[in-house]
Amino acid sequence: MPAPGRPAGCPPGLEYLTQIDQLLVHQRVDLAEVVLGWEMNNVYTVKNSMGQQVFVATEENDICTLQCCGPGRPFTIHLRDNLGQEVLTLTRPLRCGLCCFPCCLQELEVQNPPGNPVGYVVQNWHPVLPKFTVLNERREPQLKIKGPCCSCNCMSDVIFEVVSLDESAVVGRISKQWSGFLQESFTGADNFGILFPMDLDVKIKAVMLGACFLIDFMFFETNKGKQHQY
Image 1: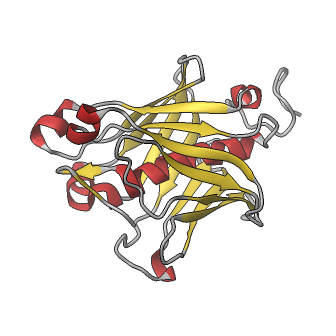
Image 2: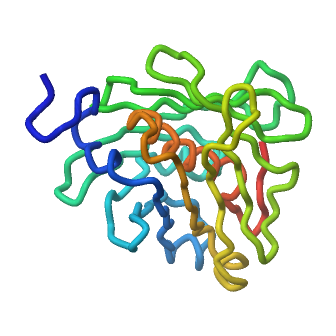
């Protein structure tokens, strides 16, 4: 039985996601990265449409992995609510980011509570477009994500459309938002917006949130001012 006040089928800590249809994700600027050029653990603030903090996401990685692997690094990201309770754990294994073949495609596992998968994001091989499939906890396909052929966001947003499995209907989006010339040029801090149907399964909403972090690492993390693509 679910706890009082928690909808049936809703994992603990995700009740708030049942009430909303969009989220904003802001990466915090790290001065050591800006001044020294060192890779540091990423920290993000997840907000609602009114700018109120909902979660804080913190990357867990060691200094060697950060400096040697750059944005292609494996990671664990912990999402905690405003009470400090961990509500989501995101894990990405190390994959060869330069491989153009299906053997080393990217994957993200979303867990709630830690150790209990609620869904996955898997990269689909395509010669030109960034494409992903959103899977539920049983690895059954639920939605697809399609990005543009060029992820350069020169003074405009970059839209990754969330579509039905047959790609006939757009049901949401993950957008990398233009943050202004100074931030885009001199920091690795990114801003995203996530839009999904209000009645979407809360677990899939959580997986879409996880997809946002995977997309950031794959296409928008910077190293000495250069963008990487996978």
